[in-house]
Length: 395
Image: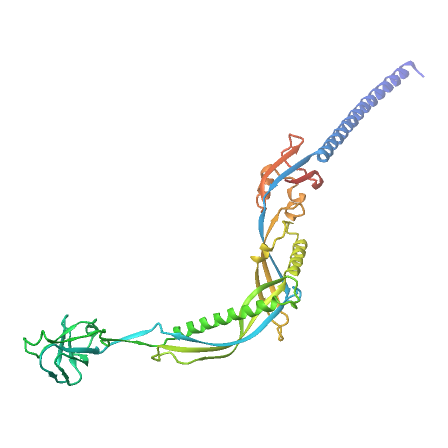
């Protein structure tokens, strides 16, 4: 092979090897970048995992007791109760009415005629007698007033009106001679009446009030009867509680001796009532109450006292035909304190929240008083995304 050809081949070989080295260097540089990127991403991922694994938040809550309205339903039988019944009949007389009508009349009364003169003094009917305050009356009979004696005579006011209703007073006999008037005169010992006539007229309000008064009296009597029954030795309920005070279940008969518009001073009302009272066993109510709280997860129950049930509201409906059972709605204001079992305190509610957001949520929960939040690590400004890394403490 010629020398020139050999040199050319060696030159081409060197060029090829040089180009291959450059390509290899480029590939190696490219893969180095990939490796570095992968390692960086892996480190970052590890750091993120470590952060979320070790990031923790402790939420401390100081609580205060609150009142919670609890409502539940039961039956009289479930509460170990019964409906007490009694029939009572009685009458009541109502004296006077609230509606009084006034009219004018002529006042009347009696005057004692006195004769201190030495001779008898005859006086005809309609003789005028004038009172000290100027009201004129006339005698209603002819009389003779004996010398040194007296005689009573009925008198009637000369005009109608309240002015004739005067108190006891002295009367001048108008027709007598002036010299006889000091010796012969009249004197009343009782007030004159009838100038103003007041008539009692019965109203619907009077009748309604009389019925109400009688019903209340019968309810009181029924209450006493029921108390005697529940206090008897053979009474079966362990701890009796009245949940519905005596009430009128049925009216068998009712009558009034007068009607509205009648002019009467008094009237009578008669009623025959069936009265009921509902009682239950307090111990069974307590058991149902505890069950209700447990089922509804309402919070940690404070010690149960009878005061809770004293203030409870009860309403009974749908009494059975034989009055042995019925529906009871119970409304109780129960003192409770916040418990960790309350769904509002579930850690999932507070993931990925700032301190302000956590406090906003907590302050909406009844019973929360003061809140303290601690983040770890200290530079964290949000709660972890993992529920397990959030701890709630009640104080």
